[in-house]
Amino acid sequence: MSVGDVLLVDKVTGQPGDAIELTPLLLVDGTTVTSDADKLSKVSVKAEVVKAAKGPKIVIMKYKNKTGYRKRQGHRQPLTQVKITAINA
Image 1 (tube, rainbow, N blue to C red):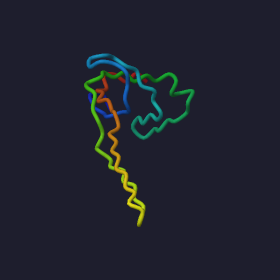
Image 2 (cartoon, rainbow, N blue to C red):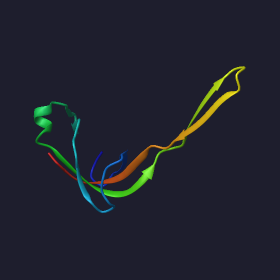
Image 3 (cartoon, one colour):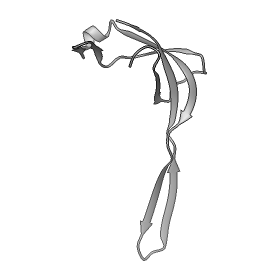
């Protein structure tokens, strides 16, 4: 990810336009890849909430043969669309 990218992440509390800070897990700078927790503690990623969204519909169907048992259930994961505003390394 880089500055200006728009990402879908799990639901984050906040209204559109709010600033949030994300925790980096991996830092790639050219050919250098850093995953050390001590070095990543100095890195901050700031983002802005763009809007709330929902994931694709997942249909869960349960069925048992010869008993007449059927159960249909659906699920849509709540997501948040965020825009990366700054990466301070």
